[in-house]
Length: 79
Image 1 (cartoon, rainbow, N blue to C red):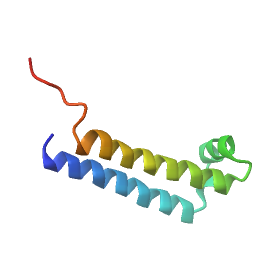
Image 2: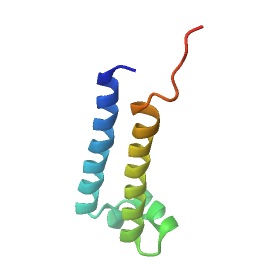
Image 3: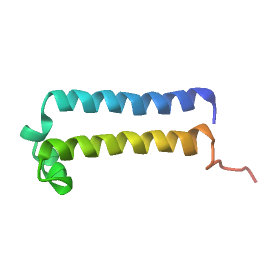
Image 4: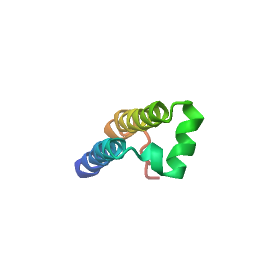
């Protein structure tokens, strides 16, 4: 995997984090039905559920980058 793809994936994860912050500032969990539903699955407090889900999404993206992309663990080996 070339360096540009690794950087692009990390940039994607970081942009998702910024987008999550934008959604938090816009109080999306109060006005968008899917966000309300997903947040309510995690916590009765929709704000807390929204934050937990978005932090989890960010951590998952960073873990994938560290484990799979940066170290190239799931490489396809030519025959």
